[in-house]
Structure formats: structure tokens, C-alpha cells
Length: 369
Image (cartoon, rainbow, N blue to C red; front, top):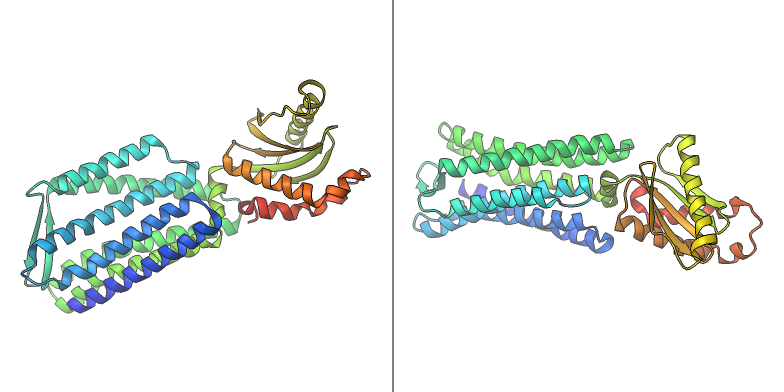
């Protein structure tokens, strides 16, 4: 049965490592920071499952090796839970709050400190399981319980927020996959651990097999998480920020291109468009063509501006961000390159620029859902 645990652990470690490498490919093409968090998370779980495979194969004489292997196995698992909390913090808010990270860091540090205090962890060789076992102190269990509660709370809160913010069924399906993968991994961890310990007293073979299923549950969960994320990695930006509209206007304040991403009342659109035209007029008559505002807050919206030649580009969102600025700058460059000659001979027809929607897909891929 030792070989069963070893084989399942190796399989789980290999799958996790392959998925981690695939995530790096995704990061290379998208430059999304959240991908790096997932990469480290998958690597931590890969290390955890490899260590899980090593422990059962250690002989009765390898007490010191078993002790340190178990320590790093536990640390990697707690570290993975920490990264899950940080990941959902990032995709919900678009940033990582110092206070929450500091709190998780304190708990993780306290866990590590207690872990290395003599007497807090006891490793012994079980003749029943024919493997090394571990017993932790009440202090260590208490810290793990608090840590688990915070992480589970963060996951549930993140799921509720993400599901409410999701604007269409495709986005909801994507995050359902993501949370399904997490649920499978956590459920497998609990079931395989608890059932393996209890059933082994009655049926050693069946109990050992259930214990060994833990890496497989984790691997299946990670695979589903990877699929959910890979469907559209850019979609995480729709959770932390809302984009309502993009407009292109000339120096006279005339809108030559307009596209809405979210339904907005006609009155609201009129007021915001008026504000944009007012900015255009201000630039033309007061500040001069070389002075441009970067952003403007109005009616609970943030208007982000980019200016190229005689044209102004405005993106209406709920907040400013570098991601949106980069996208707007890229859109403006593509627009100017594509319609350079049309702008010189424009006859007033906005149909001239109707194909500019294709540039939105390139500049704001997370909006094309």
C-alpha cells in the first residue's frame, strides 16, 4: 500500500508541476500579475504532493528525514492556502491590501514559529499504517483553525462578490469552474484524510487507498481551476473594475466613435458626454492643445483621457487604473494608424469608423466576453 501512496503522490505532483508551467506560458502572453500568484500556488501544491509521496516510502530508521519532510509538507499546504486568500483579494479589488496581507502574514509567521518549538510536533512510525505519522499540539491546531476560517471566509466572500459582478453567463460559468475546482480539492483533502484514518483501523488496504487519493483530488481540482482561468485570463479585470463606455471625439467636441459596454440611462449618458465635450472645449479655448487632463471624476464615474493629434479618446469606468490607461493608449494608436487618411478627409459620417470596434478586442481583451 506504500506504493499506492507513492504513485498517487507522484502523479499529483507531476500534474501540478505541468499546470504551473502552462500558467507561466499564460503569463508570458498576458502579463497578468494574478497568473504569477496562481503559478506559485500550483508550485506549492506540487511540492506538497511530492512530499506526500516521499513520506510513506521512508523506512523506520529515517526519523529525522520523516520529521523535516512532514514539516515542509505542512508548510507548503498552509502557504498554498495563504496564496488562495491573496489571489481572491487581488481579483476582487484589483490590488492586495496591506492590512489583509499583514494579517495573513502574522498568522503564517506564528504558525511557522510554533511549528519549530520543541514538543509542538511529534513524528512516530505507525506499524498499522506501515508509515510515518504526525501529531500536532493544540496551539498549532488552533492557529491552523483560525487560518482556515479566514481563508474559507475569503473564498466565500470572493465567490459572492464575483457572482454578483459577473455580467453574463459565460463569465459566471468561468468562475463556477474555478470554485468547483477549489471545492473538489478541499473536499478530497477532508474526505481522504478523515476516511483514510478511520477506515484503516477496520480495513487497512481500503484506508490506505483513500489516504492516497488526496493528491488526485487536489490535481483534479487544480486542473478544473486551470481550465476556468484559462478560458479568459483577462476576465479577472471585470471583477475589480467596471468599464461602461469608450468615446472618440475631435477638437470641436464632436463624437466620431462611441461604444457602450454596460447599459446606462440616457440621462446619465447625456450628462457624461456633455462633460467630455466640456473638457474638449476647455482644452481648445483655455489650456491650449499641449495641456491635457489625464482623468476626471463625474457622477460617480471616472473619465480617463488620451489625446492623439486633434482627437481625444475617453474611457468611462468606475475608477482609474494603469490597465485601462494602457488599453486606451493602445486603442488610440490603432485608431490613428487605421484612419489616418480618413480623418484628413472626413465628411462627417460616423460610419467611417464603425470598424474601430475591432481595436477594442485587441486593446481591451477582457471586455470581449
